[in-house]
Image (cartoon, rainbow, N blue to C red; front, side):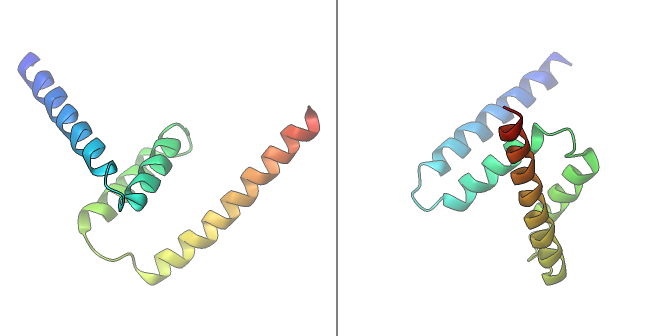
Length: 95
């Protein structure tokens, strides 16, 4: 059990080092953007385990995102942005 935990920690450290190295590349803008978005999502309790699984499966598939999925995601993203703007405006008005 301890050996398994150490192996997982070593793997995580190696992945962290690899990510940090990749982020030094001037062409890693998309990687950086996606990591920041993922980090924000992981702090939101609304980003469910089911959603995380769907995202992991999409990434692992290596396939291009289907056009209909991209269109639906874009619409939902725009709605989400408006929702965040409204929440921000409400907070500012309450201050």
